[in-house]
Image (cartoon, rainbow, N blue to C red; front, side, top):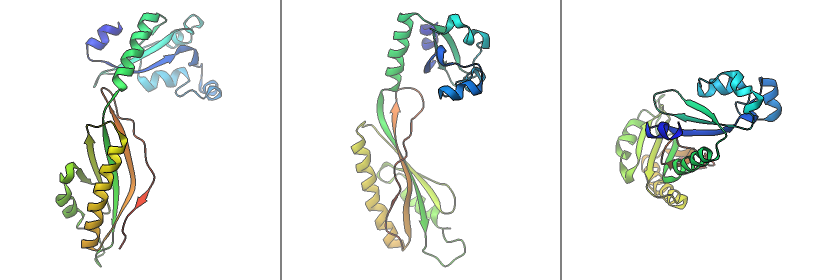
Length: 210
């Protein structure tokens, strides 16, 4: 079943111990297990596994392998077979192996005009910045915009260097336009072979203000 699902384009999103699945929410709170109640677990992954199967004492020593293929819902099955579990763990590790980094930075802009809507020119800033140094920018609202860039490197120091490069450019723009540009947050995410990014938010940082 596992090999067929992988061959059909599914990827593993989790390997869970059936022993941690609880009867109800109150019991799950005692364990601290995410989606620990049987109802929450089934709803979270939209599984077609009966509650009584997950709660059956005979299955407590088994593991639930959950897979997903967009846009299909998740599929999952119980197993205690060592060969199957080892194959699932190997595949999961392979999927999560980083093949690059994704940088996301959110900026705020202030000052530079006596008009009520001071940041009406943020579209012009984005137009001038877009694709510069390989970054892609988009407007969030009248005072916020976001920058994104993907790196083939898996070294986070390279991502920090890219941020520093853009910091220099941003400082120049801020001085020329007599505005304030501030990093509200940034995220450096590992790009896995398969599956979603896992994002880590860094500390706030501020640059030249008007």
